[in-house]
Image (tube, rainbow, N blue to C red; front, side, top):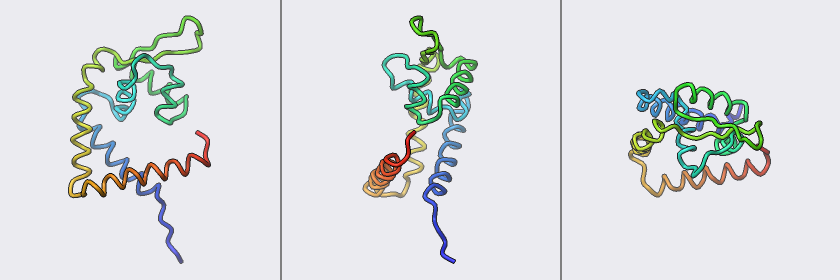
Length: 144
């Protein structure tokens, strides 16, 4: 019987190890595995709606709501209701989260270097190009 290799299985394993290492590195910040949310918010010039955040992270809106409220409890984000549309919630980083960004970025860079150890720069760039192409190919067929 022919063995089929799932691309997703390999990517899940990489993601699991990568996320686990970054979470461990950032354990003092009590981010859990939500460092990605903090980094996504850090790139925004102004507060974003929860819907926009879900879009940025490519996760569903209900999951985004749970994450945002958890980060708010930890004092890492602030949620403000849009006075013109009370259904909209704007999310922004708290001052303590903003001050942690340089450390988070250093930790991510450290894990990136560890992940890329022994891999030629060109091969690593090819990996990113190919993974981007795979994502684009699949996104054409699947609506997020």
